[in-house]
Image (cartoon, rainbow, N blue to C red; front, side, top):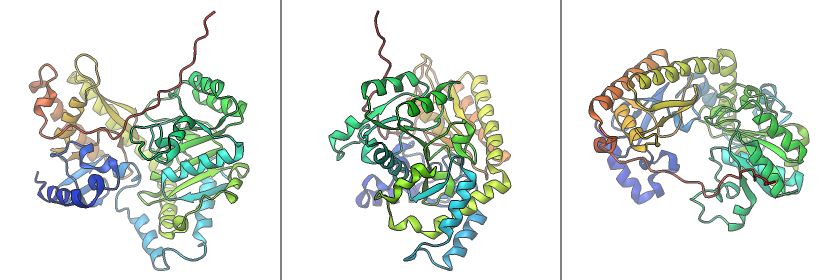
Length: 438
């Protein structure tokens, strides 16, 4: 596999672009640098072609937004048809209403919709709304991150430039730990404006967790904001709200709703959404019609083709097959999470998490044309049974190589590239329930 063009472009980008790209998660350093491609040329369905002509079966899918598949015909047609009439205007376009009506019919507990361009903007807009509604400033948060404005960025290692007072306004609790959330409210009486919760990342909720979250929000007059940037239009057409049967007050969507288009949305009942008539949550490009048209086409296609059901079925084949192979070869590289949002959890022989083992697996997979990230793996509607079978065959080859070659956890000795670098770490510890002594 030749990477000459990728390497030339990377050197050029080092002079021109901080971190060589606009998104940390896409930078060469986040993969096995030196072995992975760095720049893409085109993509179609479940595959992409890099600038050197190498073709890869992709499981990162644009960092998660590609739910139908790359270069999807019906979405492309909707975009090009709208392009004939224009992209952006001095007045709203009727397609704003059309897409809003579609979302109101699709997403539970939705009377109104506010469009944004990124998931970060949507969740930040919802947080601002919650603060305006409750007249309180602090936030209780549980999720995987990905919301990069000051209110959240204060809680991670890359927090330079964020005013220090923001760190005092965010309180973290762990998933499935409603006791920790209760402790946050006890410690910050009448100060918590909102609970910002990702319905699930990889861990499944216990029987009472989500019910308790809703109850705690109601008891304390806090707005429950569901961050469905990833779960929305991937777990279910109605999002995690429907899949997990939890009611959010404000619910934020992005990524998969537009199959790669720059669009996000804040949804909710009128009693919560009306506040946006007062708040300065406004953007010139909120009415950009290509994204609205493409998103409308994406959601209609999802409904008509039942695409999400297929993704679950295909994903389960990968999820179960991967773990069966790992168990057969006695390699601790288990897929965890959900068939439509999973990641590989690697342990060494002592039971400690092993980045080296994961990097070796990723390296050997990409050499066989299977592109996976150190983080999540996603399934799109364009992934086929043949794709899954090819992936499992490649993984079986990797496991054979590891079984025959690796001794005493010496995974790093066989890395031909650099270990993936961590993008950020959390700087605020989750709150835990204080045990009262008798």
